[in-house]
Amino acid sequence: RLLSGGLEGDATVWDLSDRRPLSSWTASESTVLSIQGLDGGRECLTQGKEGLLQLWDPATKSSLWQAHTDACSFARALVLPSGGEATLDASSASCCIVSPLAEPHILGVFDVRAPGKRCDLALAKSAFSPPGGASMRPDLPASGMCTALCGLPVLGPTHLLAVYESTDTCAWDLRFPKEPVVPSVLAGDPAAPAICAAVMWRQVWVSCSDGTIHALKLRPSGQLKRSTGSVVRAAPTPYSREAPEAESWQTDKSGVNMLAVRPDLRLVAGARWDRRVELFDVKTAQSLGRLHCHDAGVLGAAFDRERGALATAGEDGRIALWGALSETYAGPVAVGAGASAESRPK
Image (cartoon, rainbow, N blue to C red):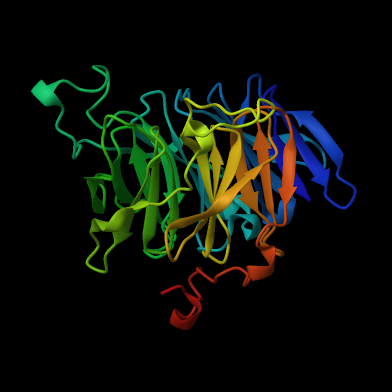
């Protein structure tokens, strides 16, 4: 089965065997920014563009919990299971939910078992020093708003990575919310704001609005450092080459909306603004090529952990299913508390 969220606020459960919807309901008064399955699909979390987080029972289409964040950031909410297991395997009662708030450089931490917030995570100090001391936005710190949230299983189930507009990248521990446990570093040039990020054990990729994907590494010392080469090599674009008129490209859009990591941590899919899906090899940090199906920007991507198949969704309202490179899938990497050192990526 597949969960999807729509531009009109609908949430849908799909049966992939016949590619038909099993159920659908209104989950947001606006666009659904993200949707995530929990507890084997018996629960799901939706995040609306209006800033509403809601936990649902898909079988009854009933709301189990909700929280108003009033967020204006497009950063997808992060679910952190307390045992370090995959989100799909975790009950909501064992999870914390992290989301930007109305002041989008501040992250709110929520527990569905209690009303209100558990705590805030506020980045007080940016690694970016604006020329002349002027902030990117006068109403925000130099870091700007949070644009991406990822779990950091290499550090433990209470840790997360946060990326901000300025490309400030840091790590938080929910047990010590006063300041980041891994100090902030700049992943790229603040002139090209960070859009999304991905974590592959100790590797961190940060994608910026100019299309550049910067690579960092979390050292055993607990510091984030630029990786050797520091830039993930994307495929050359055909923008400068003559192309058939029937092949439409958004030539002024080279960014990536989302980076999805295959559960074996060997492959990353980039949902690109230019209507393409780009596949990257994690080991070499190089592009393996681009896939074309959507007639508008690609908004999201997700991998099936059983078969390694890829699903993508676009502004054109279409969901595409891909089997590209699924034959190389090695199965999900064990990253929970019980995983052995041998089972974890080197």
